[in-house]
Image (tube, rainbow, N blue to C red; front, side, top):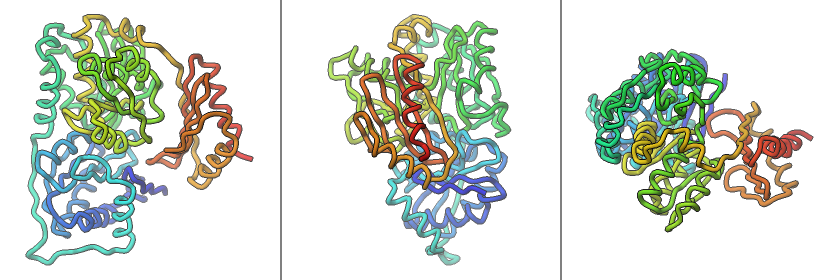
Amino acid sequence: MTLIMSVSGVRGIVGQTMTPRLATDLGAAFGTFIGGGKVVVGRDSRPSGPMLQHAIVAGLLATGCDVVTLDIVTTPGVALMIGEHAAAGGIVLTASHNPTPWNGIKFLTSRGFAPPPADAEKIFEVYRQNAFALKDAESVGRMHRDDTTHVKHIERVLRIVDVEAIRRHRFKVVLDSVNGAGGPGGRQLLDALGCEVVHLNAEPTGRFAHTPEPTRENLTGLCDAVRKHGAQLGFAQDPDADRLAVVDNLGRYIGEEFTVALTAKHRLSKEPGAVAVNLSTSRMVDDIAASIGNGARVVRTAVGEANVAHAILNDGCIMGGEGNGGVIDPRVVCVRDSFAGMGIVLDLLASENKSLDRIVDAIPHYVMIKQKFDMPRDEIDAWLDRVRANPGGRINDTDGIRIDWPEGWVHLRPSNTEPIARVISEAADERTAHELVRRMTDLRAE
C-alpha cells in the first residue's frame, strides 16, 4: 500500500494508494499553488491513465485553471508543449519504468521540469491541509485538446541534426517502445530520418511486453532482433520515453550510460562547451571532454533531472543528461528526451561513417555496478550516517554520499521515486567495482 510523494512527484498502486480522489485533490493542490492559469496535461499509455486524467483535470478546473489535454504523449512532449502554450505548468500521469499496476503524477513548472523541493512541499502541504482555492460556477476553468505534440516534438529534433546525411545512410534500426507512450512518435521520427524500422512492442497499450526498465536483463529480445535483422543499431524506450538505451550493430547491449556518452561525444565535437551530468553518471563523459579539449568540460550535479536542467540553464551548458539513458538537449526541450537521443546518435553515426561498435570500442571503458536495496527512508538515513562516519576517501554529500578513491568511486543515495537505496560504483575492472560496493554494504547494518 505504498504511496511515494517526493520532489519527483507522486507514485502509487492503482486502486490502492493511487486513486481518483487522490488525483483530483492533487490537481486542485497544484492549481491552488500556481494560482490558476493554463496547465498542460499528458499521460503515458497505462490503462489507468484515462481515469486519472479525468480526475486530475477536474481538480485543476475546480481551481480556475484552463487545461490543455494532450492524452498519450511522452514526458518530454508534455514539457515541450508547456512552452508552446505559454502555460503556467504541466502534469504528466506516468510511473516511468514501474510496472503496470503503478501510476504516478509528475508536476512540471512553466520551464518544463520538476519544481524545486521547497515548491513541491508547498503543493503537498496544500493537499494535506485541503486548502484548495475552489472557484464558483462562473470562474471554473475551461479545457480543450491538442493533438500536435508528436509533430512539434519531431520538428524540433529534425532541426538539430543533419537530416539529409542520416537519410543517405538508410540505417536499419530496431526500436523497442515497450508498448509505452513513445511508440507512435518514435516511429514517426525514424521514418522522417529515412530509417528502415523494425518496431517491437509498438502499440501504446500500457500492457508492457517485458519489464519496462530499459536495462540489460530486460532487453534480450531487442539484442536478438538487431542480430536477426542485421540492423545497424537498436533503441529501447521506457514507458514515458524520456530514457533511451542503445544496442550496437553486433547485438550488444552497450547500456544506458553510453547514451549520454555518445551524444556528448557528438555534441562536443561540433560545439565545445560544458556538459552537465549527475554524480552517478559514468566518468566516460569526463574522458570524452578531456580528449576534445578546447573548453569542453563537465559540470556535476545532484541526481535528478531538474538538477541537471538547472545546471544546463545556469552554467550555459550545451547539453546534459543522466546515466540512466536520459539525454537533455536544450535546443529541443530541457528534460530527458529519447527522441533527441535517437536523433543525435544517428547523426553521430552518419557524421563519423563508422559502425556503432567501432565508435563504442574507441571510448575508454569502465565497469559500473548498480544495485538497489528495498528499505524505508529512516533505514537509508542510518546507513548514510554510518558511511559518513567511515569514509576512507573523498566525500561529496550533495546527494546522498559519493566517495572517490584513486581506484574508482561509489555513490549511495535514496531514490526519489521508490522506497529503495541505490548503490552505484565504477572502476576499471569488475572486481574493483564490486569491492567498492562491498565497502558500502558492509556498513548497511550494525
